[in-house]
Length: 218
Image (cartoon, rainbow, N blue to C red):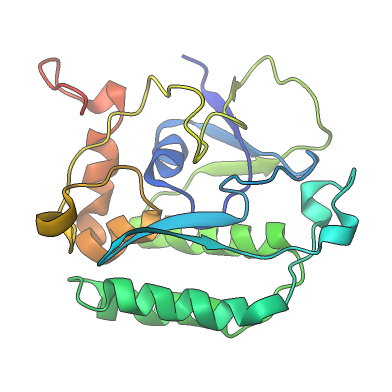
C-alpha cells in the first residue's frame, strides 16, 4: 500500500476521511482542483431524530468557474452559521460528549471565514487534535496526477460512486440508533459527540489493516 494519500478538502468530513488521516504516513490535501458540486467539500451529513440531514456551506457562485478550491469564497447567504450550529445542537445535545466538546466547535460558527478551504482546514486540525491523531499534512502545489500517492480526491463522496476497499464501518453508539438503526460514515462530529476520546478506536476498527481476520464488513 502507498504510504501517501491525496484527499480533497472537506467540511466536517465523514469517518472514512479520518480513517485515511489515521492510516497514512503522509497526507496531501488538494487545493488546486476546481470546485465540485454536491460533495463533502462544502457539506456534511449528521443524524437527527428524523434521519440524516445534510448541512451545506454556501459558496459564492459567480466565481466558481475555473476557480481553484483554495480561492472559493464562503457566502453569507441565509445565516447558515446559525442554522448549522442549531442543527448540531438539536441533533447532539443528548449525546454523551456534546457538552464536553461544545466549546471546541461553537467558535467556528461565530467567526467569519472568507474562504471555504481555510474554514475546512481549521476544523480538520481541531478535530485531529481532539482525536489525538497527528497526520503529516501538506498541500498540493498544482493539480496533477500523483503517482506516488493513493488518489482519494473523488473516492470519498456522498454519492458513493466508488467503493473504498480499505473502509469497513465499525458500529458505535448513536443517539437515535434505536429508532433509525446504525448509520455508517456520518460526519466525524457524530463519532466525537457520541464516543468522545474512544472514537479513535472506532476509527482503527474501521480500517482494513487494523481489523481482525474474522471481522466482516457491514
